[in-house]
Image: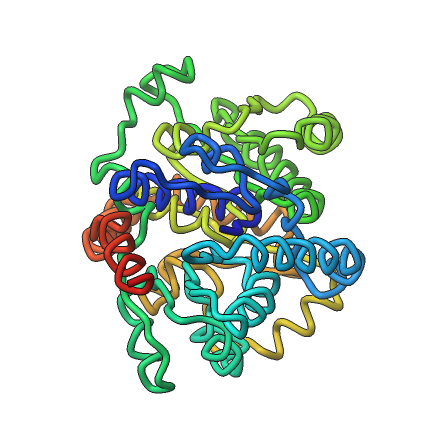
Length: 371
């Protein structure tokens, strides 16, 4: 298996739980993180090696990533496992899967690349590289069927893992927060490059929000290893603001909060499954942004908006992602409880649709592919 960054490690860990229930003696190895290791996964390289996003950023790490992929492919072709499962990270995994498939190994890609959102021509590359695609969203298999690619909808593992009713009181107690009082979660992403671009904007927005609502409190879950990067940012951009840094614990923060300021990515879906209003933001290297923007196929970037096919939550991207605009969008949610309740109802319906016992469904498909 290969999973890149924190969200891939989380998804792969949930999948491995189902695989281990089916095959208690399963051996799994490759590239992964602590969530996978908890299910016996042997990481030959750590998952954060792949935590790079954007064309310019990838070019800076291309030599190292290419070397890792070549070494991993050599090792897998020598050991010849029953199956290879690439978890997201398509720019790394699809090339590796193509090589393995040509040499007769079964290849499965877990998490469909967003061919419905951008870079639709990748579907042909996917067909050449994989035997089966495990899809998280119900509309995806039909897109692959049009191109003769085997794909199955298995539901979203986060919809299984996150309770239908968020444990707000328990999470507040665990974090030492009072039942009353408004709390805002700041989620600037899991990659270093994301945090560098987005965290200063969210922290500056937090300072503006607290100036208008002095009783606000802020929670900022920090990915392991990035605390030394984030702490100086808090002092620079949110001096005197009540920002509590958490070591991980993002789900507790989402359950405990009243509002989320969040970088576009898997965390936006997590916030939706916790039924929280949010402001989605994103910023990256300007050249990478121009390249990606030209390939965009839909008007939405955030997963909640894509899945509901509507701007149910605001998106502030690149030049629009100023602290003032982020703060104002967040304050509008806090000033409109009825809008928050209506949004929570829509997110509840989305949660029900995505809840399919992913680990069990995916395990059945993987067993069929191997057989």
